[in-house]
Length: 443
Image 1 (cartoon, rainbow, N blue to C red):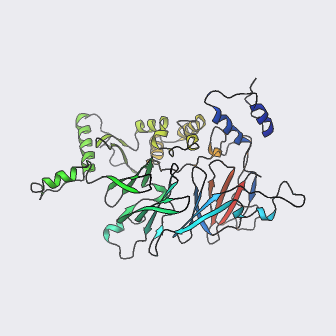
Image 2 (cartoon, one colour; image 1 turned 30 degrees about the vertical axis):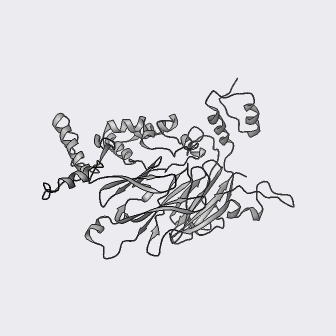
Image 3 (cartoon, rainbow, N blue to C red; image 1 turned 90 degrees about the vertical axis):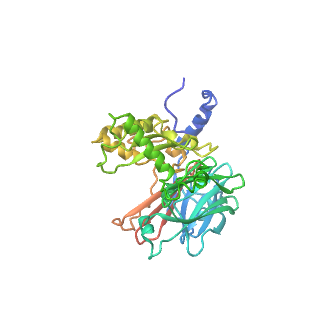
C-alpha cells in the first residue's frame, strides 16, 4: 500500500519508485517530489565575486543576468555545477578553498556595453523569450535639472531611450528601437508585458500602448499603436476628411471608447451607480478590459469590485501568462491552481477588518507584472510552505551568525533562485556598507 508519508531518505524514495508507478499524466509531478530531499544544505557566506548587480536567472536556467554598477554594461553567466577532488581526506561538511569561488559555479560568457555615456540600463527591466533565447533590455536617460513642466509630471519614471533585443547565448544585439522623449514605468517591468511574440509597452507621456512583434530574427516590429487611434485606418480616415475636421478637436480614440462605454452603461443601468457614486473614495482606480481586434471596451471594474475579485480568486492564472514553451513555468503556484495557496488567501481575507479594503489591496497587484514569479520548486506550495510551524526542510540565512556587523543597521535582502537546481543567491545590502553575496546550494 502507498503511504501518505514521504520518506526523508533519498535512496529509499528511489527504491520505492521502482514499485509505485505514478498515475497517467502525473509523472512530472512525482519526479518533482524528489526536491523534498534535494534542498540547499550548504552556504558560502560573502563569496568573493565581481561587484555587479545580479538581476535574475532565466526561466530555462541557462543564464544568470547581471549589470555593472554604473548600469552601462550587461554581463551574462552560465550556471555550472562545481566538481572537485581532494588529495587528502575531505570533510563531508566542508569544501576545499578552491571550490568556494564564484567562478566554480558561474562561467562568464561575455560583457557588453548597452548604454552610452549619457544613458544607463534600466536595471529593473528584463524580459526573456525562452523559445529563441532572446533577452529584452531597455536604456533610459536621467532627467535634467531644467526639465519642462510636462517632464516634471513624470518625475520618478524612466525616460526611455531605446529598447534592445539581444541573443543571450553570445551577446549579439539583434535590433533596437528608439523612443523619443517618452516616459515608461519600467520598475519591475510594470509598463511592459510580453505574451508569446508580442510585447506591449505603455507610454505615459503620449497615453499610447505600443504593440511590438518580436520576429524569429530578433527584430522589433511595431504592428499597432492604441491611443490616439484604435483602428489601423483611423488616421487615414481623419486625414481624408481633413477639410471638414480642420477646426475640430478630437479626444484620443481609446479615451472616447472608454467614455462611451461608461455613458451607455450608466444610461442603460440607472440603478447601478457603482461607476459614479464612489468618486470621493480614496485610492480609487478602474480596470478596463479592451478587445484589440474589435476595439471595444468589454467591461469596466472599480478596484473595490467584488465581481472582479471573484475572477481574480478563481481565475488568477488568466491574469498573467507563463513563458512560452516553458516546462518549469507551468508549476508556479497560485490560488487558482493550488489548494494551499487558496487556503492562505482565504485566511488573509477572513482576518481582514474591511472587505472593501482587502479587495483594493488584492487589486493593487493588477495588471500583473510579467515574468515576476520564480518557477523554482522551492516555491511550489505542493512541496514546501514558507514560514509554517511544521517540520523544517531547510533554512536560508542571508547573513552569517558571526555577529561582526552592526545589528542596528537596516538590511535589505533579496534572493535569486535557479529554476531547477538546488541553488540560490542571497544578496544583502546594508546602508553605507559593501553588498554581500551568499551562495546556497546542495553539497
